[in-house]
Image (cartoon, rainbow, N blue to C red; front, side, top):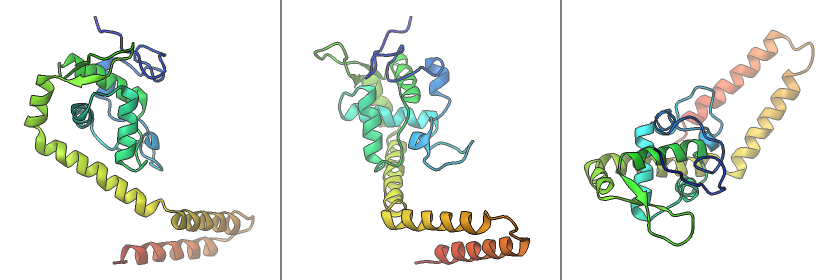
Length: 198
């Protein structure tokens, strides 16, 4: 029988929000939504990591120091500069799976909510997959850098201005096809010029 793991808010079998399916099934279903899971992403787009990669990321963070599920969510958010925030519906089933695999266990700590700590089996798994783990954390760092470059105030202002102009100019009645094609050509040219920037 799976043990009860209270989450940061104490609701649901694992806390932290509603449960999304069973431990193994949910954990292998990929990441949730961004900023939950990919900010600005399109429906059906691949998540930041595969489920097996997520397990290694969480295992490494827990090996660094014992953590609760909420701490892990915040840790990933900090590593990506706020560019990625995994949902509780993904984190808690993945923790359950890691515990079932014997890679983590409840740490000895005061209070009702005991953090997870890495086990010898989990440490061995991290050593076995050290190169993969390093690559995963490099990917998190790259996401933080990309967010810093693309989510600054000037970029947001320019994108909002563009959106407002397009809606104002092309959203009016009687706009002909030539005007639409002209706007598309301008946007395509701008995209190409940005792509050629050093």
